[in-house]
Amino acid sequence: MRVAVIGTGYLGAVHAAGMAQLGFETVGVDVDEAKVERLQSGRSPFYEPGFDPILAEQVESGRLRFTTDFSQIADADVVFIGVGTPQKADSHAADMTYVDAAVASITPHLKDGALVAGKSTVPVGTAQRLAEYVAENTPEGVTAELAWNPEFLREGFAVQDTLHPDRLVFGVTSERAEKVLREIYANTIEEDGTPVVVCDLPTAELVKVAANSFLATKISFINAMAEICEAAGADVTKLADAIGHDARIGRKFLNAGVGFGGGCLPKDIRAFSARAGELGAGHALEFLAEVDKINTRRREHVVDLARVELGGDLRGRRVAVLGASFKPNSDDVRDSPALAVAGALHLSGAEVHVYDPKGMENAAKVYPTLTYAPSAEEALAGAELVIHLTEWQQFRDLDPAALVGTVKQPIVIDGRNALDPELWRGAGWTYIGLGRP
Image 1 (cartoon, rainbow, N blue to C red):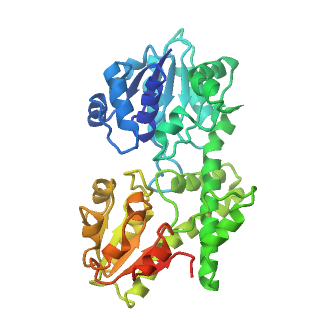
Image 2 (cartoon, rainbow, N blue to C red):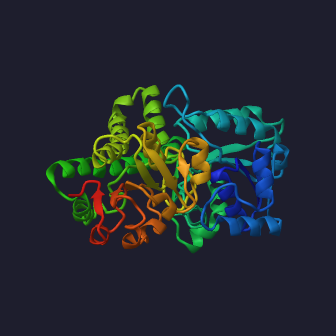
């Protein structure tokens, strides 16, 4: 069985390499010539733990290749769509330009019996529209069908989530489509016992946005509790531990801090709300607007705390920011809380020095006016305030005692509640955690 993957961004490139790793002859297709050239040389255009060795191995083996020529999908039995669906500039709705263009580009080249499997996160109703397009526009004598197989990749764990997913969702309209997808994922289904949910197209489309909306709600809930804890003098980390022991709730995603970011959760909850409104069911997701507001409010709160700690005025004050990527083990700075806070500090007149192990090159493209340090220690040198915003292990491992003499004032705001308060306070630091006394 031959596989094609349209789109070689974060989702598409990892999925293509994963398919090759599972033994399928795979071609990745993208319109970005520079990206394709880099991938074809076995080099990743982004940072993802464990991805580079698999990419290089599979390209060298010949099972994996990349091209800008859509006609190269002509012998593919399954064509996955893995392009982006960014938020529209003029609304919260998802921009379907890239998905529509991908389907239009592959349809003339589909062979008889091919299965198009969408992985992109799309508004519910998209799959049916695209299925009709494929049926109407394939070459004469060619019959192809469309299924939806949403992705659930976590940045930092994308290789694991591709090769060993925690669940598989097949949105199909025929037994044959289900059979083809089961063959593609036979290794993980049979060896890992991965559960498979077979459903219709609309349900498959809703799974990803529903999951992300739930996670975003859980994060914003604990951040709302952090606001209450700060007002009451309570400790949100202990509160989270206590309610997390309830099996109905669970401890995961109950880490209060500066909030969520990245290329999925923020845009997905907004696009989901927008689509619900188009369907006449906008009232059902009104709570997501508050989820979004709470998340944004936590970023503003960190800036307010910084202003208080520096006497009410940030102008000319040197602040060290630890973190630029939206999460550790990633160089992704899309909607990054760390960069949002750093940018707001800079706009308030602070002299901001940022360090991130992997995200600084991308961060500099978004916020070129910030100062980027080559190490955490150099970012902290002379700082009047340190703000920890991305929970890289490297930052957790810092020795606060050794850093006291580096900074001008030993004050740290832990925007992720990931540092050890006793360790830092014991070393002479003023430690401020979010939602903690």
